[in-house]
Image 1: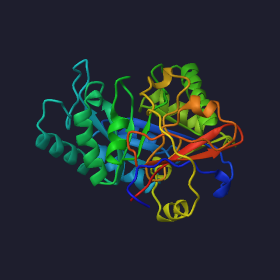
Image 2: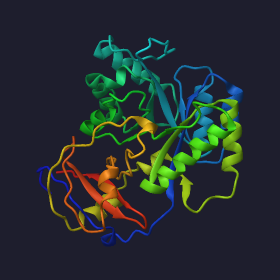
Image 3: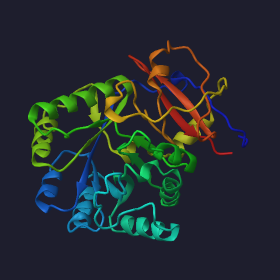
Length: 328
């Protein structure tokens, strides 16, 4: 393998993977200030991806318990927002020097046991600051963490910064509980399941509200659906030597170039699913591309990180993509 920047189109049949249930990646943000609600969240069936606010009274204790019970632990990193809302301890602001910024983020990460990744708390201002998101991703790469973009602004450049730094990244598809009525919670959950069924995965973000916890306890206790499954982010974004070895043995396809996908606008963009899966880096699956595929091998484009290859996985109802980082 040379250092030449390549994109590879590969067939699923070469790998022989069977079709599987769609992945529902359930993330619960804002954990750490309320012990009782945090303990209730721990009763949810694993795997749930739990994001903890740093330096809050119960974050460390609850994070350790969550990891022991098979949940994925994230830092819910407080990031500056356009409205000027207070971030609490461990906030990241654009006016910080790089040294102060790095020290703050590292202290935030150190405060959360068993952390596997991070996502943004608020962040409508900071996530559109590409330089500072680069600082975030440099630390994430150094510490071998993934990043989940909550997509609190359409101008986010988190995904671009992550890809450039070689950090696995996914983006939110649906917010579960902007409206906490039972009908709205069910509607949003079903929306996430529909996206997962169509594109292979959906990232669904909720919060530790009593109404949300009650809804999830009931919904997740129902018999498992054959069409979707709860999945841990660290499993979805796992890097395995075996996978890389297997990929290296596959035949390469045609190469071409197109511009990378633009940032979406969260759950209101019905035709977008950020990242179908990742082996070394994640994929930002263009649903328009997916929609028009017919099962034939097609050439795919380079991306913001030109060393990311693309693996196309046809399934029973659509095509799915993997992007694989190709080491020189």
